[in-house]
Amino acid sequence: MAHNYYPPQIGNWWLGDNLGSGFSGSIFRATNLHTGQVVALKIQRLNAECPTNSYERHFYPALQGGLGMPTLWADGTYGKWDYLAIDLLGPSLDSLFRRSGKAVMDLRSVCCIGMQVINRLEFMHSRGVLHRDIQLGNCVVGLPPNDKIIYMIDFGFSKFYIDPATKRHIPDSKVKRDFIGNYWFTSVGVHCRGRVPSRRDDLEAVALMLIHLLTPGGLSWTRNGVPRTDAAHDRLMREKRDTRPEDLCCGLPAEFEEFLRYCRRLKFAECPDYSRWIEEFKALLEYKGQPTSSLFIWPPPDPQPIVQAPPARRSQPVDPAKVEGILNGLVNDMANVHLGERQVLGDRSEVANRVRVTNANAPAAPTGYADDVIVISSDDENAPGKAPAAVRLPKAMHLAKLAQAVPDATDNVALARVVLEFIQVLQENRSRTLTKEGFAVLDALYKQMADPSVYVQPLRTSRPRNSAADGVEEGPEPRHVKTNKLWTLRRNAAAAKSNKALAQLVAEFGTVINRSSGRTVTKDAFGFLDALSGRLRSLG
Ligand SMILES: Nc1ncnc2c1ncn2[C@@H]1O[C@H](COP(=O)(O)OP(=O)(O)OP(=O)(O)O)[C@@H](O)[C@H]1O
Image (cartoon, rainbow, N blue to C red; front, side, top):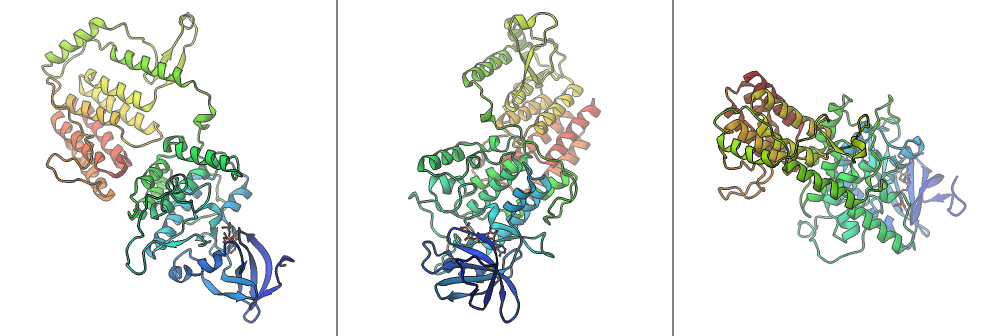
């Protein structure tokens, strides 16, 4: 039944249950008095402070016919009411998730949401429309038989980003403006820096929404509820702006961090690569052995493995000075590491000389601890029978240590072990981006395999993009080019006849990763590294 405040009938529509209320109006289930058609009737007073209906109705014609776009059946005014009659749809993702009572959503459902919502945005953007208010409450499922399809609703903040007169993209502006959107998911650029929203910001909101669903307790800035004062809003913006993607996505599959970083790297008028990210989420499901269909099946059919994010870093009080001290100590220790006597692959007299100098100054290396563990011990802890406190090496440290260890790998079996450890470090880490420490390992491997006896010019596989030696501008290569190249490298590695040939492949591998968007070590990249390690072992 309609609320007392509202009339029982508006135009040809008889009002039924209230489906939801927004800032400026309400939505009712409504039945057409003549045809019996049931719709969702979005009604607002004509003198509403924020008359979004009169604005929203302009976007429906552009969006009609797209999958997941509600149909506008009728609209108009009736007395002091403005109404839109749109497809009656099901519950929002927000209410589905809240009702589930779960701390996090299962990975499969989140990937399906990602794939569908990105697809909806691709359609909206292809029609020249920005949504500008992406949030869980504005993504609803259809009614059966369309209950596995996600629909976008609420175009009250939408905007045409292609100027109808000039057919050009709306201009950017340096002038800081009030933000449009929502506190939780609106991009950092728009919300915290007052930038003009464009396609990239719709996509960033999707990334934040997905990360929110996978994080116990949600994104940290959502946990205190809607800010009620300017000071609380400022605090929220600061937290949103300052939280780094790697902290936000701590413990989540790397795709989420990469997606967020990708959105934040997009230029103002750049067209996002929608299909790439739909494919990435599909590939993630495949990798996890899950069905790859994007249909949103709710509740999830089987108990799904839940992605557990470790507690947010900020909740663990850590004394930064102490950590810095420990890391500095480690760097010094690594500089003095005992390299020991080694076999050589060739004439490496110059290398050996340097090793002798280092050894003369080096203290005895601690022994008996796992490679990836740093031992921090007091005198007391060194007492027999007392277990030392251990800290896991961060990725950068581990890779730096690995790069330093490469010259010690004086035969192919040892080199194969280094490659395996390289794979392990990369796979254990939440981010699959190849950092400069990772490139340093590749450089060291190249040198060791090409000719360890001479100091070759460092390979520098990680040279900055757009600075090709021949002066030709080199942008990131499309994903399919990367995949093809990695496949060829993998095949060639399996057939390589010498270390020199393998070294060349390592150099090419570094270049391929360096030129790829996000410098990501994908499954195909791991395939090459696997083949490299296997071939080193068989060359003996
Ligand atoms: N077509 C629909 N079918 C069923 N329920 C709907 C439909 N459209 C909206 N709703 C429900 O009504 C709620 C409010 O809808 P909507 O966001 O369009 O209104 P709004 O007034 O613009 O809200 P807000 O001020 O929060 O942006 C939605 O979260 C949803 O639960």
